[in-house]
Image (cartoon, rainbow, N blue to C red; front, side, top):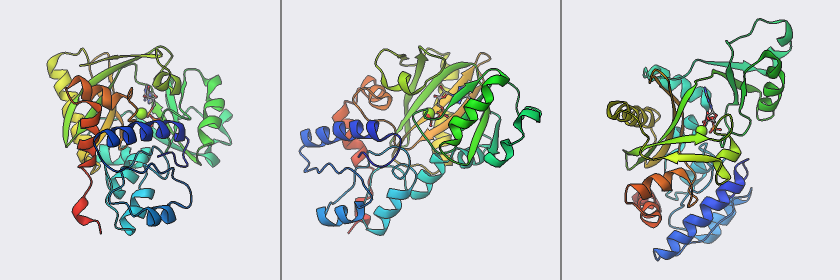
Length: 298
Ligand SMILES: Nc1ncnc2c1ncn2[C@@H]1O[C@H](COP(=O)(O)OP(=O)(O)O)[C@@H](O)[C@H]1O
Ligand SMILES: [Mg+2]
């Protein structure tokens, strides 16, 4: 839990909730705040299995998964490659497109290409979304409605890397699908109080409203579940994930991203969907624990 990413605070909350559940379930658990000396800590603690409660860089992007592979420590959730692909929005876009899965129109912009921005024709029609390649929790994401907002949006996103994504803005409903044990749990609709599902809408109680199951015609609902599972499979994810989608007013769906380590605080979306499907938090935690490939550890 914790770790070195911009989502550290959320991860500490996910980790605390998971630790408490594991303790209630009778497991001997050791909460570990991941720092640069994590390999030494893991060696010292002689753990049987790592329950990964990290989000973002080094935790959700294959880095910790690679270390655990080298150390022969089984771990929960997706493996190294799927984690790395899912964290990288350029790689995800390419893989989903290759499978003919629907994604918003997306362009990649390097920092060096923005020098003459003022004199360039707009690379994408307004409105569009600017986002970093490998962040989460909406960190660095802006919606650009007018040309005057472009500069600030790019500067904000470039703080997180030398490439950013420009994506057509999809006006419509935001739907997230939870996948557990390779099956969709259901689809939840998110109504944000602000312009989009930003950091505050995600973590400040009352800043977003959740509707589960998402009120959609049954065939549309089922189509979103199918698409989410296909996206999870296209990236080679395992165990569980949360797939973010948008659906426009013509009911045309778009896949935004696949979160391989979705938030696991007691008020996060994945636990909320599970609870509404009759799977309480502790049962969810135990089901995720069972996704670890324990036979392959030492
Ligand atoms: N193309 C888009 N059109 C409309 N809203 C978007 C688009 N892309 C992102 N958003 C909004 O920004 C939020 C965060 O974007 P997302 O791609 O899921 O990145 P993150 O990894 O930070 O969650 C989404 O939940 C959505 O509210
Ligand atoms: Mg998202």
